[in-house]
Image 1 (spheres, rainbow, N blue to C red):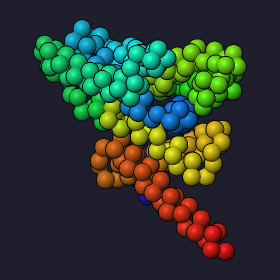
Image 2 (spheres, rainbow, N blue to C red; image 1 turned 90 degrees about the horizontal axis):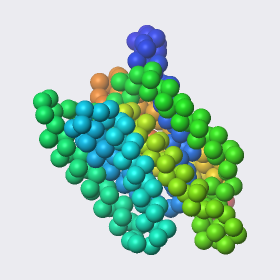
Image 3 (tube, rainbow, N blue to C red; image 1 turned 180 degrees about the vertical axis):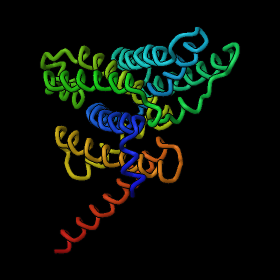
Image 4 (cartoon, helix red, strand yellow; image 1 turned 120 degrees about the vertical axis):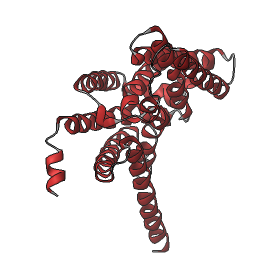
Length: 276
């Protein structure tokens, strides 16, 4: 017990806790928007395509996360453009950009002269390695995203649920969708260091799906997703430390287990109500 109490005194664990809290808030807002659009694989496409930016940045000697941000924004806005113009089915565009980004990332990483970087940190992440600068970056994006949602809550909601009807009623749907594509892309990039490319998709999906067991209202889904995300992240962090296993994977396992347990409880409650 004393070991766990002392753990909270370490700077690296404090940073991990701050990052968990902020990412829980950020992913709850962004993830609920993605779920509302009924296309969670948008985030998967952006996430995996961003690896192309990481590989090219390594090859050019630049910050890999700047490369990831550039590729993520390009992919997110590209998917929106393809969807709006009807040049290709949205799921086909996501699949192509997803595969292309991963392929480019792998090629350029192995073309990089000298020491080949360890891809495991990008693929699976390590929230315990998050520094104070990362925490500030996540904080800034969380505040920006929260402010944008507070000011433009209804237009964002309308453009997510029924874009065509919103266009007929004069709403500038394209502006909000492109802006949200950029925010989704940046949210994914700041989460990669903590959760990794492979696991980020789950972070933007599982807490929201858990929240939807109890409500279908956008605001309430966001609130519950923050709580479920934070609880799952904290349990995952402590379990990872206790068993000396990767923190990102443990957090996702914790979030999944939380969903399955609450889903079982919810199903039992529904049966009891029906039988009463």
